[in-house]
Amino acid sequence: MSHNNLHRDEAAARATLLEVASYAVEVDLTDGAGAPGEGTFRTTSTVHFTCAEPGASTFLDLTAPMVHQVRLNGETLDVAAVFDGDRIALTGLAAANELVVVADGAYMRTGEGLHRFVDPVDESVYLYTQFETFDAHRMFACFDQPDLKATFHLVVHAPRDWVCVSNGAVTSRPAEG
Image (tube, rainbow, N blue to C red; front, side, top):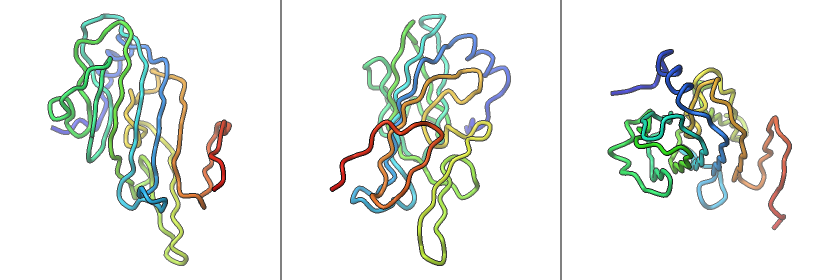
C-alpha cells in the first residue's frame, strides 16, 4: 500500500515522539564514470534522532525505486520487511538513534524531489530542488515534516564540469585533477 502522503495525526504523533538532531546526506549524481546519471542517483542518509519513548515504533519517509540498505543503531534491517516504496518502518527505537539508509532515488520531471531537465538544444543537464511541502523524501530519507527540524551536512558528487549551487556555504571542494 502506498503511503506517499503524511496525515496530520501521523505528523503530530511523530513530533511528540521524536527530536531530530542532524542529517548527513550524500548524493552521487554521476553514472559512476564521472558523467551525469540518467534515471537514478545514489543517496545515503545518516539521521541522528532521539525518541521520547524507547521501544516505540514510527516511520521514516522515502520514495525511491530501490533501497539497498537500512541500518538502525548498527543493526542491518531486512529492506523487504521495512520498506514499502514510500516509508521505512522503524521499530524498537532506542532513546538515542542512528539510522543509515542507502538508496537509489529517481529523478523527477514534475518539479518534485530532484528534478532533472536536459536542454534539447545543447543537451546540457540541469537539476534542481525546491522541496515544497513533503518533497524532500523524494531525494533522501528523512522525517519529512516542518516541525522536525535538524541540521544538515550535504555532500554532492557531480560531474566535474557542473556548477553546484546551494543556499549554504561550501565547506570544501575536491582537488582539481
